[in-house]
Length: 325
Image (cartoon, rainbow, N blue to C red; front, side):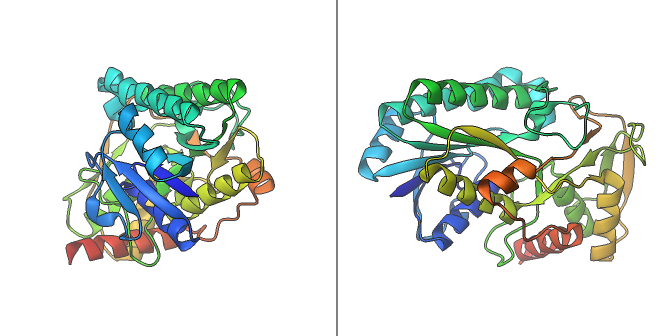
């Protein structure tokens, strides 16, 4: 059995590829390298450069490599960018996902894992937020991901396909063994940006909004280590292969940290007192969103191993140091 990982040369995808290989899985990566990196794909995985929306290519890959499962990461992920380029996000995240799902159905793929997002919840009324909460995305990014969740639900009802959508909260950190990390140029992830500022790669960091209804006025997020998230994909794959039904699961730690708390952690761990500038709110940012993770723990048996903000920062900083070498 071979797993096809779309977007496997990107941040979360590359970490999941590493976990799959460590578990003895055969892996084929499909990535157009628009934001991913060829060098991050291990030699034991087959890299095919191409677009996930190319149905002929995906059909050929499935046939030639005996693909039995698909883990779908490929897509656009920047919330503010989606606010100014909504059609681009609906095309890249929704239209191309539909094309991939169609190929999965036509070629008899039984297991499909989708990289979704907590952005489907919008600004939840109750925190921590559970999977059965109202879905009210505040950005085209969140809406485009929710549309794919709906397509997978409907396709699995009509066809012999089981799918898991993993709703990521804020992903951060790097592989503890130093094999991969967040490498995207002009990344917007808070911990990545703060680590760059701590190391002098940026002359400042901006805080977008200090008047939210939170303890210190800044947004609160649930930060999950990328390796713990990668392991959640393996747990989802095992669940599907064991006959699990189509479902959705939150991926977080059920604990939130404010923007100021994260900045303080990076300053403390790095020993660098970098410049912080206060700016206006950004469109599409909810005040606070923290995961209720009872369901993934009970159903998939997932147990995080790296649930510590300082540890996440230590490994993110270590990766930035490696990238400087």
